[in-house]
Length: 124
Image (cartoon, helix red, strand yellow):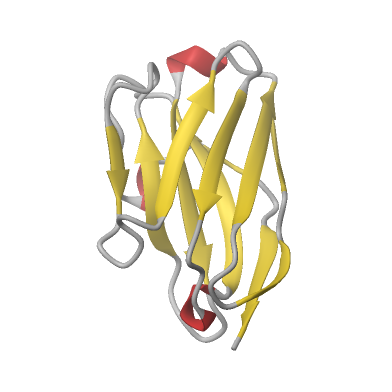
């Protein structure tokens, strides 16, 4: 199984980025997917999650109304659209796959597979 994130980078505060996570080696539409992030010196935290069909989604309070998770099962890809970025959004962002896909989980230890992460840096 491989999860490969892309789309990270350096952006000014108020800007936007779209992260992508391409999955292979698994039956993607059987998995719930999540986006997590980890800033230096902080614990990994959930950002957003989505069920296997996309009908149920979650966004953390800190990003609600700014970040949107979506998925394209035909492309085996999950996305995180990030708008109105803030310096406090700076972190390594990881996507993860949970085989119990009918509903999302917000707990990192529920996820079975992880990507290598992509850096997002928001300058003030």
